Each structure stands twice: as structure tokens, then as C-alpha cells.
Length: 250
Ligand code: OAD
Ligand code: ZN
Image 1 (cartoon, protein in one colour):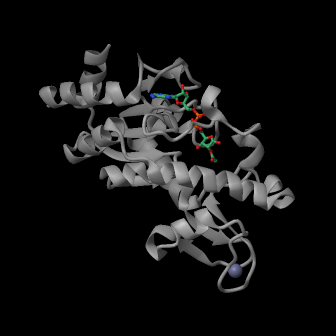
Image 2 (cartoon, rainbow, N blue to C red; image 1 turned 90 degrees about the horizontal axis):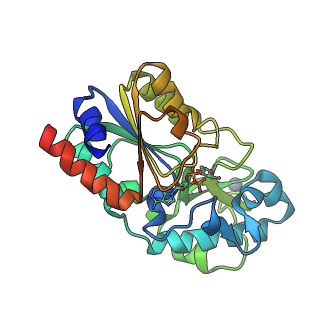
């Protein structure tokens, strides 16, 4: 199976990758669903919504501060690094991610499409103020504060610049992702439950256009029914092996 997957990727003219929270699990970032997907008594779906933020912005900010703290401590794992290396070798052309954690960027991936925003950015709930907290050096200040972060321009509450349930995805990222999916003749899907749309359409678009689907996951997902190869296991273990094989074939 691993050999077959390597053959698909090595032989592809235009391969892309599509990732979800599972690729960062081995870096210590909690996934959204499954046993480790709970924060206190809440499920992510109950907190990552505009309604939850309106009802209790303190609670939602507490959740995001907890995630930011986890992510800040996390380092890219061999799965992120293998994808960056595959891009370097010209095997994959882009990484489309649902993750907000920056670990693909830290690993060196260059052509990165972030469908769900980035947890280290904030934006104003009233005006068009945006801030990249890593660039402004305010990550720790925001994590350690107990107050709601405020817009320096208008004083309104700032929110994480991530996509919540029921909100549209950033137009340019989605357009780019769909365009890549239409052109791709192979897609490597890693660590996503494949149940959150429109992101989960991406492997389906590749498949509809005649492309091959290779999936890596510890369990079956919403993508598995269309996978040409399903590699069951941890991303941090499988991707380095896959990289080694693809390299030999190239
Ligand atoms: P989920 O938490 O839904 O799914 C994580 C997937 O990773 C599951 O299918 C696991 O089986 C798999 N997994 C866990 N550990 C793994 C490992 N070590 N190696 C390989 N696979 C592993 O995360 P996403 O699919 O990313 O949206 O969730 C999609 C979206 O729902 C997220 O982007 C987020 C969430 O609500 C927003 O924030 C808008
Ligand atoms: Zn403002």
C-alpha cells in the first residue's frame, strides 16, 4: 500500500496536500473531534461559533488562549517536515490546510493555503483592524491577560482571526484551494475527519476531475470512501516513510 501511494505521488504531474488537525496531533495540539477533542466539558463546535462569542466572549477567549498556549509550545513534527520536503523536491505543489496553528509554515512549507485562518492573528469585531500577534510581539500579552483584548483603533472587542462554524471561508483562500484541486492529478490527505464543509469538498473535487486520492489517518474518515489508497497510521510515522519511497522513485 505504501509503495502504491509512493508511485501515485512520484508519477503525478501536479500533486497537492490537504491537512487537518490530525497532522498536528503528534506535536501536542489537540484535535477537534474524538476522545482528545474536548476542552473542559465543551466540544469545539460549541465554542467556535459567532453565537458562543456573542453569548460569552470571555469563555471563547479562554478557549482560544488555551489553544494558543498549546500551539505556541508545539513544534512541527516529521509529518509537517516531510510535506515541506516534498514541496522542496517538487513532488507536491501546495499544502491546503484547515489548521490555524502555523506549523506548516514553521516546517518550511511555502505555498500554504490556510482555509480557516490563523490563531496568531486577531481582528476587530467592528472595524477592519487586523493584527498578526507574532509580528507585533503581543502573543504572550494576549495569552496572559484575563481581559477581553480591545481594538487599538476603535476600542471594540478583538476576536481570533479564525473561521467559526456558520461563517464563510476567506474568499481568496477558498478560490485558490478549489483552483488547485481542479488542476491536481493527485492529493495527499492527512489527518482530517473530512466532515467540515466546504473544506472537505477539496479531495472530492480532485477525484471528480480524475485525480488520485491518497489518505493517511489513524481511522476512517469522510474522505476514506473515495480514497484510492488508505494508509492507516500516525502521520508522523507514515509521511517520512512515504517521502523516502517517493524520493527513490523520482
Ligand atoms: P478533526 O479533529 O475533526 O479530525 C482529526 C482527524 O485526525 C481525525 O480523523 C483523526 O482520526 C485524525 N488523526 C488523529 N491523530 C492522528 C495522527 N497522529 N495521524 C493521522 N491522523 C490523525 O480535525 P479536522 O478534520 O481538521 O474548523 O477538523 C476540521 C475543522 O473542524 C477544523 O479546521 C476546525 C474544526 O472545527 C474550524 O475551526 C472552522
Ligand atoms: Zn476596531
